[in-house]
Picture 1: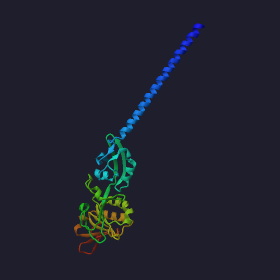
Picture 2: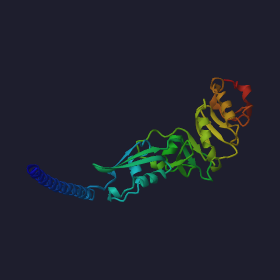
Picture 3: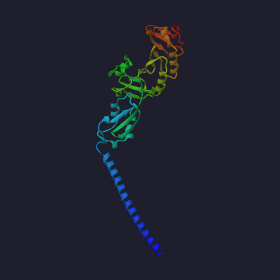
Picture 4: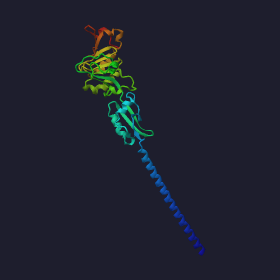
Length: 295
C-alpha cells in the first residue's frame, strides 16, 4: 500500500509539471500569433497607404469594350482628380457617372492594386443614323451623309449628332479621334420632337426596307420625305400607314428597268394605293401608266 501511494504521488507531480509546461507553451504560441497578426495588419495598412497606390495619370485607367468612343474620351468622362488614392475611388459611383452619359448604355469599373489602376468595361450605344437639327431659316441640305458628318459648318444645320435605335442622341464630337467604325449611312434631318417616341419603330421598318433609304427628311412635319435608291419619295404626314407606304415603295424596286429614274422629280406615296411619279418639268403622271407597281 505504501509503494502504491508513493508511485501515485510521483505521477501526480509529473502530470502537474506537464500541464504547466503545456500552458506556458500555449501562452507563447498565442503571443506569437498575436504578434504575427498585428504585424500583418500593420504591414497591410502601411502598404495601402503608400504613394504607390495612387492614380496619377489617365493612362492608369484601362478601357475595354469601346468601339466608337476613344479611350481618351472615356477617361475624360471619369470624375477623377489626379493624383488620387486608389482606395478613395468608388467604382460604383464612377460607373454611375459614366452611365449618365447619353452614349454609354452600361459600365463596370474594378480596382486593381498590382499595378495600381482601374479597368473600365463599357457598353456603348450603337449609332444607327447621323442626325442633323436644322436652322429655322434655312432650306436645303446638299451634302452627303459623310460630308455632313465631317463638316463643322453645315448649311441648314446647327448641330450634328448621332442617333441610336432607341432615339437617344449623342454628340458627334465625342466620337472624333476614336477607333470607331464608319459612321452610319442613314441621315435624319429635322425630326420633330413629338415624333421622337416613334423613331425606334420607324427605324426598324426603314432598316427592313428592300429599297435602301439613305435619308429621312422631317423638316416639314406635313411631308415626310425619304431619299432612296429610287429617288425622292414624298409621304405626307407621318401616320400609321407608313408601313403600307414602304410596302408600296418596295413593290416599285424594279422601276429603273422601265423608267429613267434621273428624270423623276419625286415619287408620290401620300396615297399608297395610288402611287404616282412626278417627272422633272412635267405634270404628275400616274405610276401605273408609266410602269407596273407590282414586284
